[in-house]
Image (tube, rainbow, N blue to C red):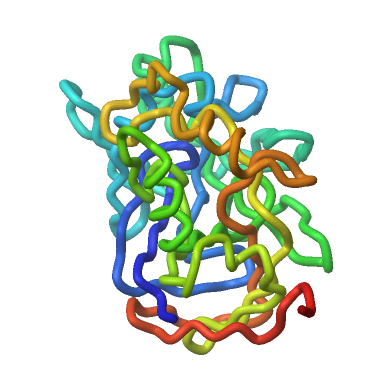
Length: 264
């Protein structure tokens, strides 16, 4: 088994970037979910309610991110400008983030259709995570892993296959068989060991085409997952992880199961 895909999502709930090499830290992949679109009072704005945000393309550049959207001129958000403390809220977590560029706010507000702010996580995150660590703007865990064999099994149930990008993973491995990830407790990829913190519950965002930002009229693949992947935690696809150490991940790195959750 090996690592076959790597994705970084610099701006939460927008289009991810496929890469061949990335630094894996306790916070997540370097630059993953370190920017957030928020309401003026800091509450997250995501593609769950604004699916067209998936049409927003983010380019990582030294010192910030370049934002692209169809029929608009690109705009650069520079981290050096983001020096003003601003409240941020991701689900139930409230913490301080950084704000700074009104021009970018106006550019994004035009896309969102309402007044909004672009927030940067900052040089050091202020969002708490268990075991005295910190978190990015990710939903609840630093990493999301998908097993390609599970996606292949799901697509065999669908009339119209879906892509990995429907599930917004960071890490993709080629497991031996579908849903084997349910059994894992720890996995080592290259030089980095991860603890599986639990299955990833799924929502309506999986029904949004990651290219067009349009919802599937039949509610797929979520409807099929409701029928086939209802676990104690909810409707699940993929697993959440946290890194036990830090290091570089490269496509083709071997993936080894260190321990399993169950004994047979």
